[in-house]
Image 1 (tube, helix red, strand yellow):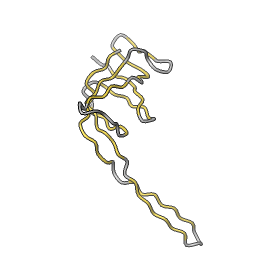
Image 2 (tube, rainbow, N blue to C red):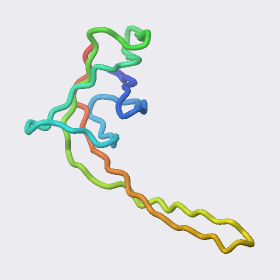
Image 3 (cartoon, one colour):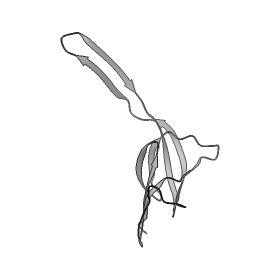
Image 4 (cartoon, one colour):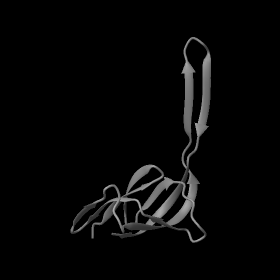
Length: 105
């Protein structure tokens, strides 16, 4: 069974399939550690493709939070030549690693 879906979370879109682990923008979930995505843009199943306008009604993706972590450090440098202007900053984005358990459409 070759089922996958495209979901939207944190202002970004992710292609996910059952049993896959994916890192997304940090999510706030309760003590259960379960998440549900209702913003499903596309579902591809064996019998065809279902496309949402913009989202598919009654479709949901169920997942389980594995961990919250910080992504690798990104360096930001501002520089102007001949004026001795140099500024350096760094940033680490907070993310959540998920296990996609079930795709329902």
